[in-house]
Image (cartoon, rainbow, N blue to C red; front, side, top):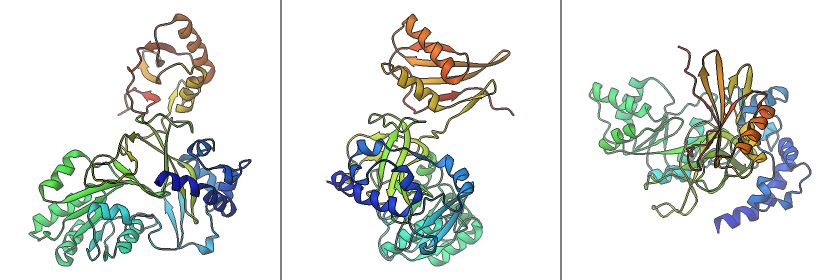
Length: 397
């Protein structure tokens, strides 16, 4: 039902996006919005890469036409590192955080100490908007100053906290050292960094429920964790595809690939926005009872590139080879240090075949401009981690 409703709304939302956003109109050039009514039709559209936004916005400030309403109709304009400019529309909870915070455990009346940044970037306002939509008072604490954070927590007695995964631990350890009572705290919501198992255990040992979400400045909430702690549940107002890195081609369920998100808000419509992050769709529904699809969470970066003998090799090149030889399994370009220079190797899942090896060797040189070795490995040998370029050279000290 949810999927059907999303697809049914796509043509109208695409038409609205194209009418308001010059960038969306370019993406849809030659395609009628009413024809975009399925995932297959959506997958035929080009992707917009986060890595391209800096140059695009520098050439066409402030938003490179990505805004869907005039600048004067926005609520806020953010400046994220890069710099990348993100518009925020007017209205309540425009980044859709209420659902994620509710899944963490927040309820109306719970005071939340918000330790995400309010300076230039949208993170602080994202969480604040979601908390206020739930009816939760917010302490706009921002980042840094651990001693003040601990003191505010002891005096104001928040029931919930949000920020980057490790900052809460620093605050609680400082509060312990100062002899402060932070027993009011019960819930935490974290994002913006790796939430490692040891840290999760540390919070659990203190009786805290601390869950995470996967969020970007452009998209808002993409997916969030529930009490089941089995993957991250996709937000109901986004369409997520997992594609082969360097392409816009969706991969099979369970395969690791790049996260591509479509968010058709009026103020900031994003059509097939490639985040540069890796993840995979999990099969089945969450044990918590929520029925939307789940992803495994953040699994690394998709924008892999390596410079070999003065030339860059990129995931797009591996994808081009895969298109030339559709019968192969997974492929990977491996860069290694070798005596006298760098060594480039193409590993491909296929039965041993001298003719195929020779054809791949020629194609590798054509696509990359570099000579390289070809290794044919048994199907299932290469890991399902989304990596298409693997630079194994040691990092200079």
